[in-house]
Length: 240
Image (cartoon, rainbow, N blue to C red; front, side):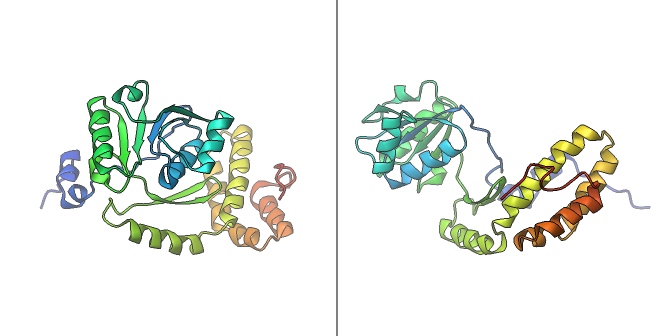
């Protein structure tokens, strides 16, 4: 009979589907990572804000900064290392964002970063850098990232707005419950099969809808049913 060819990594590498994807999706841990943002306008401020929210160590280069950035500099949260860009400012950095309104300067920053093997994003001209920043939806521990591979940021924003309606704030609360349950259950039981079944039952239950309706008594009832009588929002130290 006909033999079956098992796909190899090279088959996937050279498939049209994989070749069409220009960027490798990744969630990068930047906690304490030294990052440099060049440009202190509204765009640069948004990049700084996102980096700070992820725990990065942020340095800034800009002759002028918006009010929010000035506050962060005065608080010592952001380190202003220069008014004008110089390549030496890249020393010790791991990630760079070129966010000035000077296209040539942004491209130069990208070239300097590439020579040093650094991660670099260039606003408005993603092809000049080696990574792009997706449109984001944040619901507590849940992060949804939307990318059009730089082809249409406007469409990415529209998709984000559509998904914001689909994924409401209740997802953040459910993830808080699931995280607390997971932490406790893994301490109490080493049976991975049984634990997986319990996690699956919770996810497939009405937990999300009950949290959305703020029916906490019903939430406790599901926790009791799936996990045991010693599980409740109070026992998990969750209160809203």
